Image 1 (cartoon, rainbow, N blue to C red):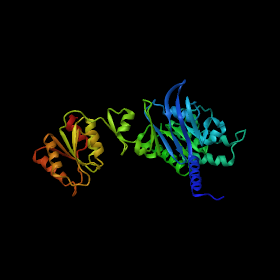
Image 2 (tube, one colour; image 1 turned 180 degrees about the vertical axis):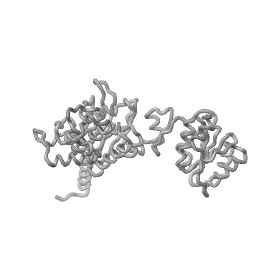
Image 3 (cartoon, rainbow, N blue to C red; image 1 turned 45 degrees about the vertical axis):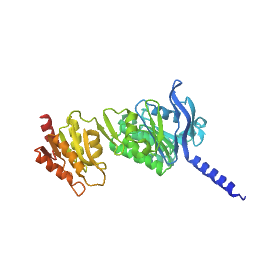
Image 4 (cartoon, helix red, strand yellow; image 1 turned 60 degrees about the vertical axis):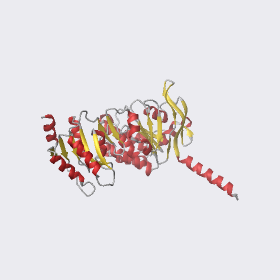
Length: 400
């Protein structure tokens, strides 16, 4: 059949829309959720495509788990709809939904006389016959799932006797064993040590990238969310919801507002949290840079000693911590040598200080005047501490 140019454009556009819709695994429409017909969150609009990871973040009690429980059909929406592959989730049979979506919750399941292997094998039951008998292929998938979460060594252990961290890995293996198109996880990093947190995120990324699985996961650790998410949904305690790309969502101001940070700061670029800066008039000047000042800044904060820092470039790895903890930071523009005005500003702050700490920052052509700053401090008979250790700082400032 021959098409005119306009008709060809319409056909192509229709094909592109259909292909795009095929990619969307989960999406909501005017969704409202809550308890006992009382709306907790409304106008929830999210979508997750094939091979993408959506991360839900927000303070405790904001409603992240409530959204997830509606997606997995553990709760019914108060209003609106949830679609999986273009179908309302209410249209799926239980078996169809189990083949489509696997779930990992933090809630403990009750088992009696079941090994870890038995629990993982439960992930194959949507594919078995009436008697629930596993085939050889099913057994292979069970073993592969256990291996993927580094749990083959506990496969024959009693599930009820293993640790919380091991339990979480087994539940993830069970979800993997289902060979899902969508995997939903509610705070899966709970109870996991840093090694297994990293392994879990690596597994989720692999499922998204290699297996084209859509992943929906709630996390408490913002720094992990920023590293794994394709899209982020912020769920605020005030019911406000924001959805977008990580680079739009993860800003210092937004995260501080979302979690109501008062006694500290969070740096989205570095994924670092710093406690409240010391109060009082600063009598210490820290001459640092190139990462040499971070531990000094934090030790002074622990000791409750107010301090100033400088001279730092705003792209220096010391800068975010200094900005969070120091009473004042003397800075220079990026990619420019330290100028006379900046040098003089640092000297004025040294005049107001009793102690100067030299962190041992390497000096080159751009920051050559940092050496002059230290020489100025010596001329003014300031007490200079060169790369002091923690014991020295404690002894000097607390008398311990």
